[in-house]
Image 1 (tube, helix red, strand yellow):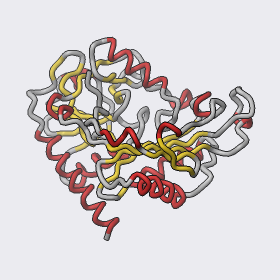
Image 2: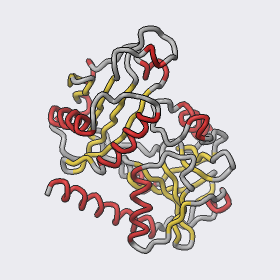
Image 3: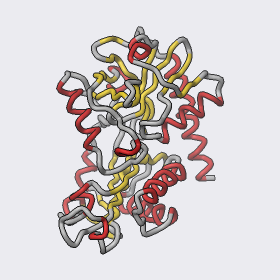
Length: 305
Protein backbone atom coordinates (compact mmCIF):
# COMPACT_ATOMS: atom_id res chain seq x y z
CA UNK A 1 0.00 0.00 0.00
CA UNK A 2 1.31 3.42 -1.01
CA UNK A 3 0.15 6.76 0.34
CA UNK A 4 0.89 10.34 -0.61
CA UNK A 5 2.58 10.74 2.78
CA UNK A 6 5.04 7.85 2.48
CA UNK A 7 8.36 9.10 3.86
CA UNK A 8 11.84 7.66 4.20
CA UNK A 9 12.46 6.21 7.64
CA UNK A 10 14.49 8.56 9.83
CA UNK A 11 15.65 7.34 13.27
CA UNK A 12 15.92 10.92 14.52
CA UNK A 13 12.14 11.06 14.73
CA UNK A 14 12.19 8.72 17.72
CA UNK A 15 13.46 11.57 19.88
CA UNK A 16 11.82 14.68 18.45
CA UNK A 17 10.67 17.43 20.78
CA UNK A 18 7.07 18.61 20.53
CA UNK A 19 5.60 22.00 21.39
CA UNK A 20 2.58 21.87 23.72
CA UNK A 21 1.21 25.23 24.88
CA UNK A 22 4.62 26.86 25.24
CA UNK A 23 6.54 23.84 26.54
CA UNK A 24 8.85 21.80 24.31
CA UNK A 25 9.00 18.21 25.49
CA UNK A 26 10.08 14.77 24.28
CA UNK A 27 7.46 13.10 22.10
CA UNK A 28 6.86 10.47 24.78
CA UNK A 29 5.96 13.22 27.25
CA UNK A 30 3.80 15.30 24.90
CA UNK A 31 0.19 14.98 26.08
CA UNK A 32 -3.15 16.75 26.01
CA UNK A 33 -6.15 16.18 28.25
CA UNK A 34 -8.86 13.65 27.42
CA UNK A 35 -11.16 16.62 28.04
CA UNK A 36 -9.54 18.57 25.22
CA UNK A 37 -12.10 19.65 22.63
CA UNK A 38 -9.88 18.40 19.81
CA UNK A 39 -9.72 14.88 21.23
CA UNK A 40 -13.34 14.86 22.29
CA UNK A 41 -15.00 16.48 19.27
CA UNK A 42 -12.46 17.18 16.57
CA UNK A 43 -13.00 20.87 17.36
CA UNK A 44 -9.86 22.51 15.99
CA UNK A 45 -7.89 23.63 12.95
CA UNK A 46 -4.47 22.63 11.66
CA UNK A 47 -1.86 23.45 9.04
CA UNK A 48 0.83 21.34 7.40
CA UNK A 49 4.02 23.16 6.42
CA UNK A 50 7.45 22.26 5.10
CA UNK A 51 10.84 23.62 6.05
CA UNK A 52 13.30 24.36 3.24
CA UNK A 53 16.77 25.55 4.24
CA UNK A 54 15.44 27.02 7.47
CA UNK A 55 12.43 28.71 5.86
CA UNK A 56 8.80 27.67 6.24
CA UNK A 57 7.56 27.67 2.66
CA UNK A 58 4.72 30.10 1.94
CA UNK A 59 4.18 30.79 5.63
CA UNK A 60 1.96 33.82 4.99
CA UNK A 61 -0.42 31.86 2.77
CA UNK A 62 -0.68 29.08 5.33
CA UNK A 63 -1.34 31.56 8.10
CA UNK A 64 -3.99 33.37 6.06
CA UNK A 65 -5.89 30.09 5.71
CA UNK A 66 -5.31 29.13 9.33
CA UNK A 67 -6.47 32.42 10.83
CA UNK A 68 -9.43 32.69 8.43
CA UNK A 69 -10.56 29.19 9.39
CA UNK A 70 -10.22 29.89 13.10
CA UNK A 71 -12.15 33.15 12.76
CA UNK A 72 -14.92 31.42 10.83
CA UNK A 73 -15.53 29.00 13.72
CA UNK A 74 -14.95 31.60 16.48
CA UNK A 75 -11.77 29.86 17.63
CA UNK A 76 -9.48 32.32 19.40
CA UNK A 77 -5.90 31.54 18.36
CA UNK A 78 -4.58 33.36 21.41
CA UNK A 79 -1.74 34.94 19.44
CA UNK A 80 -0.98 36.55 16.07
CA UNK A 81 1.06 35.38 13.09
CA UNK A 82 4.25 36.58 14.76
CA UNK A 83 3.40 34.49 17.82
CA UNK A 84 2.92 31.39 15.66
CA UNK A 85 6.20 32.10 13.88
CA UNK A 86 7.93 32.39 17.27
CA UNK A 87 6.48 29.06 18.44
CA UNK A 88 7.61 27.41 15.21
CA UNK A 89 11.12 28.81 15.59
CA UNK A 90 11.31 27.70 19.22
CA UNK A 91 10.39 24.16 18.20
CA UNK A 92 12.70 24.16 15.18
CA UNK A 93 15.70 25.31 17.22
CA UNK A 94 15.00 22.82 20.00
CA UNK A 95 15.10 20.04 17.40
CA UNK A 96 18.05 21.52 15.46
CA UNK A 97 16.08 21.13 12.21
CA UNK A 98 17.00 22.85 8.95
CA UNK A 99 15.66 21.05 5.87
CA UNK A 100 13.37 18.19 4.76
CA UNK A 101 11.13 18.83 7.76
CA UNK A 102 7.36 18.56 7.88
CA UNK A 103 5.30 20.36 10.50
CA UNK A 104 1.78 19.76 11.72
CA UNK A 105 0.52 22.82 13.58
CA UNK A 106 -2.68 22.07 15.54
CA UNK A 107 -4.97 24.34 17.49
CA UNK A 108 -8.05 23.20 19.40
CA UNK A 109 -10.65 25.07 21.42
CA UNK A 110 -8.96 23.69 24.52
CA UNK A 111 -9.90 21.72 27.61
CA UNK A 112 -13.61 21.42 28.42
CA UNK A 113 -15.05 21.58 31.91
CA UNK A 114 -17.59 18.87 31.05
CA UNK A 115 -17.54 16.18 28.34
CA UNK A 116 -20.21 17.76 26.15
CA UNK A 117 -20.39 19.55 22.83
CA UNK A 118 -21.13 23.20 23.60
CA UNK A 119 -18.12 25.45 22.80
CA UNK A 120 -18.73 27.50 25.96
CA UNK A 121 -17.53 24.50 27.97
CA UNK A 122 -14.00 25.18 26.69
CA UNK A 123 -13.02 27.82 29.23
CA UNK A 124 -9.26 27.59 29.74
CA UNK A 125 -8.13 28.84 26.33
CA UNK A 126 -6.87 27.07 23.22
CA UNK A 127 -4.45 24.16 23.01
CA UNK A 128 -1.56 24.68 20.57
CA UNK A 129 0.57 21.71 19.53
CA UNK A 130 3.42 21.66 17.00
CA UNK A 131 4.87 18.39 15.71
CA UNK A 132 7.96 18.57 13.50
CA UNK A 133 9.46 15.49 11.90
CA UNK A 134 12.42 14.82 9.67
CA UNK A 135 10.40 13.83 6.63
CA UNK A 136 11.51 13.29 3.04
CA UNK A 137 9.06 11.81 0.50
CA UNK A 138 9.89 8.25 -0.48
CA UNK A 139 11.36 7.87 -3.97
CA UNK A 140 8.82 5.22 -4.95
CA UNK A 141 6.04 7.81 -4.87
CA UNK A 142 7.30 9.32 -8.10
CA UNK A 143 8.36 6.04 -9.67
CA UNK A 144 5.18 4.04 -9.07
CA UNK A 145 2.55 6.72 -8.83
CA UNK A 146 -0.61 6.58 -6.74
CA UNK A 147 -3.54 4.24 -7.44
CA UNK A 148 -6.92 5.88 -6.90
CA UNK A 149 -10.38 4.40 -6.52
CA UNK A 150 -13.53 6.47 -6.86
CA UNK A 151 -15.37 6.19 -3.55
CA UNK A 152 -19.01 6.66 -2.47
CA UNK A 153 -18.04 9.23 0.17
CA UNK A 154 -18.30 12.74 -1.28
CA UNK A 155 -17.05 16.19 -0.37
CA UNK A 156 -20.27 17.79 0.81
CA UNK A 157 -22.02 21.11 0.58
CA UNK A 158 -20.65 24.06 2.59
CA UNK A 159 -23.68 24.08 4.89
CA UNK A 160 -22.84 20.56 6.04
CA UNK A 161 -19.13 21.06 6.71
CA UNK A 162 -17.28 23.37 4.36
CA UNK A 163 -14.37 21.45 2.84
CA UNK A 164 -12.33 24.65 2.90
CA UNK A 165 -11.83 24.16 6.64
CA UNK A 166 -8.58 22.35 7.44
CA UNK A 167 -10.30 21.05 10.54
CA UNK A 168 -9.50 18.27 12.99
CA UNK A 169 -12.84 16.75 11.96
CA UNK A 170 -11.49 14.50 9.19
CA UNK A 171 -13.86 11.55 9.50
CA UNK A 172 -15.32 12.24 6.05
CA UNK A 173 -11.86 11.82 4.53
CA UNK A 174 -10.97 8.85 6.74
CA UNK A 175 -14.07 7.01 5.52
CA UNK A 176 -13.10 7.78 1.91
CA UNK A 177 -9.60 6.45 2.56
CA UNK A 178 -11.00 3.24 4.05
CA UNK A 179 -13.32 2.78 1.08
CA UNK A 180 -10.39 3.15 -1.31
CA UNK A 181 -8.25 0.73 0.67
CA UNK A 182 -11.05 -1.81 0.69
CA UNK A 183 -11.25 -1.43 -3.10
CA UNK A 184 -7.53 -2.24 -3.36
CA UNK A 185 -6.32 1.31 -4.07
CA UNK A 186 -4.01 3.70 -2.25
CA UNK A 187 -6.33 6.69 -1.88
CA UNK A 188 -9.90 7.65 -2.58
CA UNK A 189 -10.94 9.92 -5.43
CA UNK A 190 -13.88 11.88 -4.10
CA UNK A 191 -16.64 13.46 -6.16
CA UNK A 192 -18.59 16.58 -5.30
CA UNK A 193 -22.34 16.52 -4.50
CA UNK A 194 -23.13 16.83 -8.21
CA UNK A 195 -20.95 13.91 -9.29
CA UNK A 196 -18.04 15.91 -10.69
CA UNK A 197 -14.44 14.96 -9.89
CA UNK A 198 -13.25 16.88 -6.88
CA UNK A 199 -10.26 15.80 -4.78
CA UNK A 200 -8.75 12.81 -3.04
CA UNK A 201 -9.15 12.08 0.64
CA UNK A 202 -5.76 13.72 1.32
CA UNK A 203 -4.73 15.91 -1.62
CA UNK A 204 -5.95 18.14 -4.41
CA UNK A 205 -6.33 16.46 -7.79
CA UNK A 206 -5.32 17.58 -11.30
CA UNK A 207 -5.50 16.05 -14.75
CA UNK A 208 -3.78 16.96 -18.01
CA UNK A 209 -5.63 16.68 -21.32
CA UNK A 210 -4.03 17.73 -24.60
CA UNK A 211 -1.60 20.01 -22.84
CA UNK A 212 -4.26 21.63 -20.65
CA UNK A 213 -4.21 21.34 -16.86
CA UNK A 214 -7.63 20.85 -15.24
CA UNK A 215 -8.66 20.86 -11.60
CA UNK A 216 -12.00 21.17 -9.85
CA UNK A 217 -13.74 24.52 -9.53
CA UNK A 218 -12.65 24.63 -5.87
CA UNK A 219 -16.14 24.91 -4.40
CA UNK A 220 -16.03 21.59 -2.53
CA UNK A 221 -12.36 20.99 -1.79
CA UNK A 222 -9.64 22.20 0.50
CA UNK A 223 -8.20 25.17 -1.38
CA UNK A 224 -4.65 23.98 -0.89
CA UNK A 225 -1.67 26.32 -0.84
CA UNK A 226 0.23 24.00 -3.21
CA UNK A 227 -2.87 23.75 -5.42
CA UNK A 228 -2.95 27.52 -5.79
CA UNK A 229 0.80 27.71 -6.42
CA UNK A 230 0.45 25.21 -9.28
CA UNK A 231 -2.42 27.21 -10.79
CA UNK A 232 -0.42 30.43 -10.47
CA UNK A 233 2.71 28.87 -11.99
CA UNK A 234 0.74 27.55 -14.94
CA UNK A 235 -0.77 30.97 -15.59
CA UNK A 236 2.62 32.66 -15.34
CA UNK A 237 4.30 30.20 -17.70
CA UNK A 238 1.76 29.86 -20.52
CA UNK A 239 0.45 26.47 -19.46
CA UNK A 240 -3.33 26.47 -20.04
CA UNK A 241 -5.04 25.81 -16.70
CA UNK A 242 -8.75 25.58 -15.90
CA UNK A 243 -10.72 25.37 -12.66
CA UNK A 244 -13.87 23.66 -13.87
CA UNK A 245 -16.38 20.88 -13.46
CA UNK A 246 -15.44 17.64 -15.19
CA UNK A 247 -16.48 14.03 -14.85
CA UNK A 248 -14.75 10.68 -14.48
CA UNK A 249 -15.03 10.36 -18.26
CA UNK A 250 -12.43 13.10 -18.69
CA UNK A 251 -10.33 11.79 -15.81
CA UNK A 252 -10.13 8.25 -17.18
CA UNK A 253 -9.07 9.59 -20.58
CA UNK A 254 -6.48 12.03 -19.26
CA UNK A 255 -2.91 12.04 -20.57
CA UNK A 256 -1.59 12.68 -17.05
CA UNK A 257 -2.95 13.03 -13.54
CA UNK A 258 -1.28 14.20 -10.36
CA UNK A 259 -1.94 15.23 -6.79
CA UNK A 260 -0.76 18.33 -4.96
CA UNK A 261 -0.04 18.80 -1.28
CA UNK A 262 2.45 20.41 1.06
CA UNK A 263 4.25 17.14 1.82
CA UNK A 264 4.63 15.60 -1.64
CA UNK A 265 4.38 18.79 -3.75
CA UNK A 266 3.28 17.01 -6.94
CA UNK A 267 2.69 13.25 -6.93
CA UNK A 268 1.81 11.32 -10.11
CA UNK A 269 -1.33 9.21 -10.39
CA UNK A 270 -0.74 5.88 -12.09
CA UNK A 271 -4.32 4.63 -12.32
CA UNK A 272 -7.91 5.41 -11.45
CA UNK A 273 -10.38 2.57 -10.82
CA UNK A 274 -7.92 0.10 -12.37
CA UNK A 275 -7.53 2.17 -15.55
CA UNK A 276 -3.99 3.30 -16.39
CA UNK A 277 -3.66 7.03 -16.89
CA UNK A 278 -1.88 7.96 -20.11
CA UNK A 279 1.27 6.20 -21.24
CA UNK A 280 3.31 6.84 -18.11
CA UNK A 281 5.05 9.83 -19.66
CA UNK A 282 4.31 13.01 -17.70
CA UNK A 283 5.93 15.98 -19.47
CA UNK A 284 3.48 18.60 -18.18
CA UNK A 285 3.74 17.47 -14.56
CA UNK A 286 7.53 17.33 -14.91
CA UNK A 287 7.58 20.93 -16.10
CA UNK A 288 5.33 21.99 -13.23
CA UNK A 289 7.62 20.20 -10.78
CA UNK A 290 10.60 22.10 -12.14
CA UNK A 291 8.74 25.41 -11.90
CA UNK A 292 7.59 24.61 -8.36
CA UNK A 293 11.09 23.72 -7.17
CA UNK A 294 12.34 27.02 -8.58
CA UNK A 295 9.48 28.87 -6.89
CA UNK A 296 10.50 27.31 -3.57
CA UNK A 297 14.13 28.26 -4.15
CA UNK A 298 13.17 31.84 -5.03
CA UNK A 299 10.92 32.08 -1.98
CA UNK A 300 13.61 30.77 0.36
CA UNK A 301 16.19 33.14 -1.10
CA UNK A 302 13.82 36.10 -0.70
CA UNK A 303 13.08 35.22 2.91
CA UNK A 304 16.74 34.76 3.78
CA UNK A 305 17.86 37.83 1.81
